[in-house]
Image 1 (cartoon, rainbow, N blue to C red):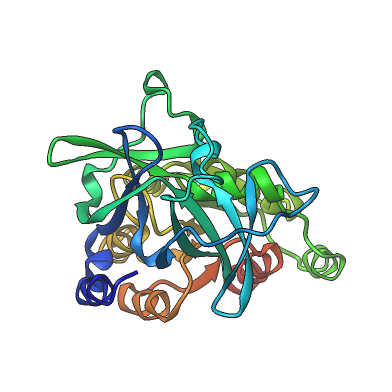
Image 2 (image 1 turned 180 degrees about the horizontal axis):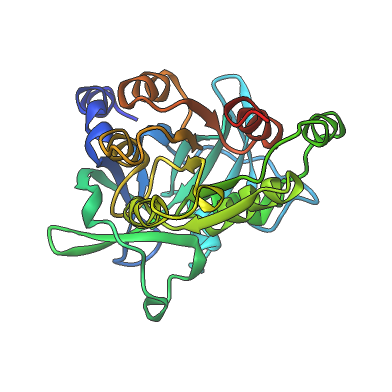
Length: 305
């Protein structure tokens, strides 16, 4: 990524705390624009020479050396149904960090960075044909932009982890937890399934929603029910359509009936920026996706028996 682009990202990092998102736009083989959160992009390069990886998943185009580290290169075009880019010399490589792992994605045509209002990001209707690998859409200067659910792409390659370790399962079983109800807000179907699997192992009931607006509505709805039926903890993604996790946490803290809720922000975006924002919006914990034992430990810490 060019120095100018990195400087631009730095100047606008605080936008993420105000329901704004900075996206890097690209194409995969036709006129359709796709986007990825800038905070997940380490660098943009011309496609480097790729080494073959015998036996690798069909979406992995190969591996390459990235600043002394060998990383897998995923053909994002193939993952979204476009002709593969692994042999296209003009392709670009997006080097990304998700959940503290580094990988590259091949894209056809790099465009530019834009800032979007989170409220303008909406879940796409099935009729648009994007499937489950796009979790939000918006319009930029009149053009439709599809936001790629990278977690879904990675899960299709690496599988969906979700089992607690034997040590953590023993800790959970020995924790005399009262019946608890947790609300989970995440726009990724894969992420919701992962979190639900962890809570199922903990015998915790989940209320699942897809974005911050639905989360806030559901929390307000449940605030007036019997104490045993109320939500005691919120686990929220940060990147979501309509309302992001930072804005949701702020809204919870500003609502008298909700401000006592424990809030865990759970995101594939790593780094010090998140730690600072967690403090600014008064969330109780930040956990990088997806680490089942850390999520379970946070629940045990925040919901004592």
